[in-house]
Amino acid sequence: MQVYLVAIEEGFLYGLLAIGIYISLRILDIPDLTTEGSFGFGSAVAAVVASHGYGILSFVAAFLAGVAAGIVTALLQTKIKVHPVLAGIITMSGLYSINLMVRGSSNLNFNDNSVFTKLFNALGVSGIDKKITGLVLSAAVCIVILILIIVFFKTHLGLCIRATGDNPDMVRASSVNVDFSLIFGLALANGLIALSGAFLSHYMGLSDQSFSNGTLIYGLAAVIIGEAIFGKRSVTLGLISAVVGSVIYKIIVAFVIDVSLFGKNSENLMKLACALIVTVTLLIPEVKARLQKNKAAKEAKRNA
Image (cartoon, rainbow, N blue to C red; front, side):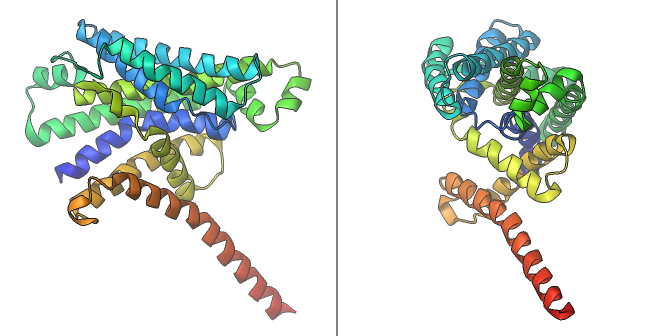
């Protein structure tokens, strides 16, 4: 039971990552590879700030660090005209070294300065109560931020960003600054991704260079799983489905480990499990489309 509680809790923490990837991939229509770099950047900055006793401030610092990373990627695309994929790779590669410099080593311990640790100690909870408290906190934070992002994309600036992703030429013809919309959108996306890294580090009580490994594929899996369930109907539903997809993905991973689906090597083969989950999820819409097409063809023959 505790395994699945932890999985759901982590699903909400990674939900911010899924929202960030949804913004860049689905709203801006940009495959942003900065993800792993900005996630690790947020984790590193949060650890350094929190280790000096500034727990809450560490989240603000992490968000701003992610925003800075997103701005760099966006400027490479808009001002130097670097291809979006290459721009993301450049920023991600640079951040790998920067993250090591920020931490001073490959990992950094919070030394009981984690917000989660302080909250648990203040409430005096342990065992299953500790897991439930962490789950409630993670869910509350993720849902509040999700609501704020949904509201933002209904504002004038939010609508401009959405329009930039849909049809930049039309937006440019409407005298809207496309470059600013793209820069703001990528900054927001990477800020949320870095914030996710900060929350995960607080939860783990540690910031490690390996934490960001595989975050891009994880975020993509969350978005794809969410869309397979809810479909592509609106931005609001898309943002919600990204978070739901994140939670479902973590539950699937927990199930794989819990039942030892791959035997003794279940934990070592998680990357393979992730690849299989993404592949199966991608196949679902295609299978549905083919079944509907075959059904329509049969009905057409009957009516002929």
